[in-house]
Length: 51
Image 1 (tube, rainbow, N blue to C red):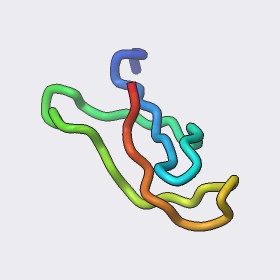
Image 2: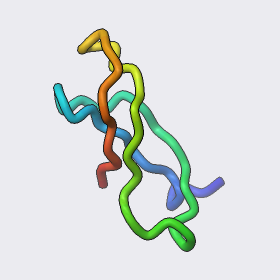
Image 3: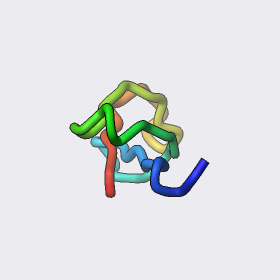
Image 4: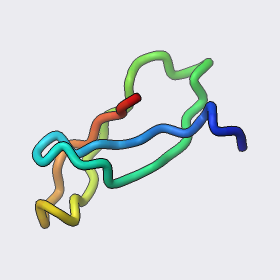
């Protein structure tokens, strides 16, 4: 898998990058947003895709 498909997921509460994932940028044009566990906040928060 190429690096072009890799994305970073950043916590909206503490602004730290916690997760890396892949997505098909041809199909999904908008930014990804999902609930994930933040180990720094110690709770589930929204994580948004960053550049």
